[in-house]
Image (cartoon, rainbow, N blue to C red; front, side):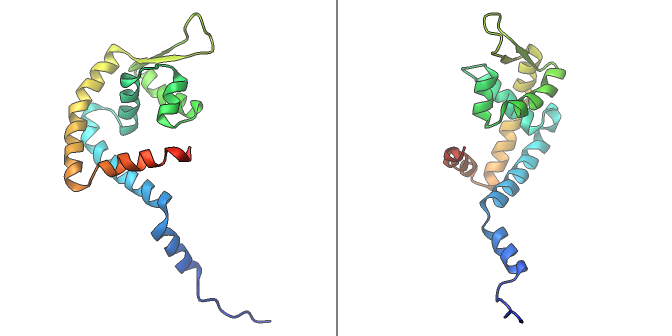
Length: 150
């Protein structure tokens, strides 16, 4: 038996999926924004993920790895991998308090704090340049709107 040809094809379905896919478009936007900021942060020697992670550490009220992972939306093993390079470069320290061997704390070293202080003006200038091109509050709104997804 010959099946009647459907009006939809894989190409049209794929095109429709790409055109309306929140995941695809948010990842594409994130890559473009990250590349834009990354180029301007390059003189600091920090990548966008490193800069963001160090800002999270510097701004923290709770310096535990568990709290940091929650704020970053990362599982602990991913966070540990992301921190490993910063530890190797002696920009952050991780320690276990004597009173609780299960808890790990993280903070910027003096070198890390100085490096972050030097990077912030570069980030600020990059963000100002970005704001001329796009409404940067949209990224903040999108992040806030997606908290219910995790």
